Image (cartoon, rainbow, N blue to C red; front, top):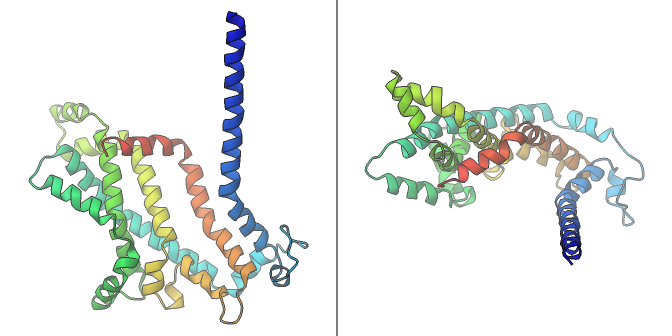
Length: 285
């Protein structure tokens, strides 16, 4: 009877594991299917895309589309602009966010809870809600059609996320090690750099990557502030293939493929730190 019970239990576990694998595979298919369509469409001809009797896979694979977009549009310029904007926004957000998160976890001051409330509330405002006000401010400071303007706006919109996630990361680290460092003669700033930040590295890297990706993918503010083709980021620049009379879908999809490459590379690079960083950021968040 005991052996029968164990076999039944083992059989249930096997069935549950199979069902779990099926669910995971189905979920991955749903998530990856749009990217598959984007990839196959990027390698079709315009006639094939607009054909009534279209097929899932290209009848003739046009790999030349991946090269043609670099000749038909200033893609390299768009790429460089996006990199500058994303790096600049990330740098400002992290430089301001790390001290703010440290102060919230290691210091006590009046209005601390109010400040935290403001941080939470600020995350509720989407850029599209504030786009008119942002445009007027940028006009006042002559930052329309400038990379600096986009850097500052992206850094501002990512600041609350940075502070909130880093606060959870720092909160999960015991302050006793910093106290020991201060006993050994380190100041508060030294103990933060020598003790806290190295331990919090996974959470910091995770936050940094997410801020970079948010800035890289931003579209609404860039579309509003930038009209000069020279300073357009990639998200706005690829609209060059969206013509008045016809959309060059094959080129639009090909450009979109290149736009997700940095995001994929970053996620591959932080895969080991991603789970631990998010878990640390969620503690007491």
